[in-house]
Image (cartoon, rainbow, N blue to C red; front, side, top):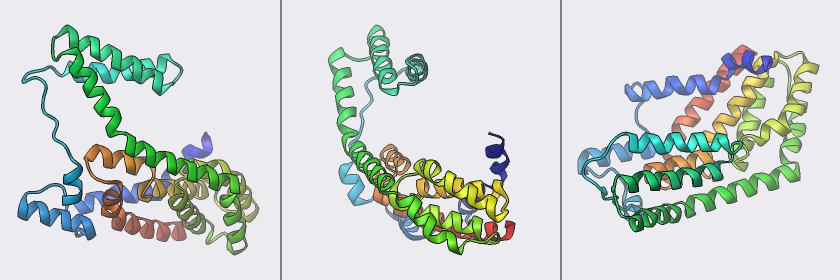
Length: 267
């Protein structure tokens, strides 16, 4: 825990990412690629979604004209509470929260019971494609972990690692692995036992090396086309995971390049 806390200042990718977001908002960094195209489309035509995403989008009509904010916060609070109550079992927590929400809305006569269950079923159907993508991503990550891909790559590049280049090489290597395999947490399990002893043998600064490893995981989660954060963020925004990933990819690459420079300087 102490090592993790001491590594927080060296999680360079996350810190640089915050700065890049602010610079993009203020237009200090120009809009690039699909982000620029989307902005121009919205300004000229008023269309927020591209034709591909608009075709898959369906408008949700409000069930009632007037409601209360508690009808939003109580189900969210119930989900958190029941998930904790059932030993962090998100499935049990979600089912309990759904039944509580149905009862809450029924008492207020917000909508008929049949319509509520139709809405629940529609939500399940909408999540089939994202969950299928996530399943394939997790399956690929598990296959790569079983094959020992992470260990093999680290051992292959370890001969080129010196004190001066270790953090940068750890970041580049693990970021590429995280991006390719969608194994963002797995690289900790497999990479830590290899990277930390290597850093100790070379006399490298451990917090910087651990910061580089965590930064690599953050980059992979941010940039991977079929990662869980990309798929779920895209679904929440009503766009395809590919469009979401391609829109943010130029900025993740800029952030990664700046992070590499910082790791070289800090080492």
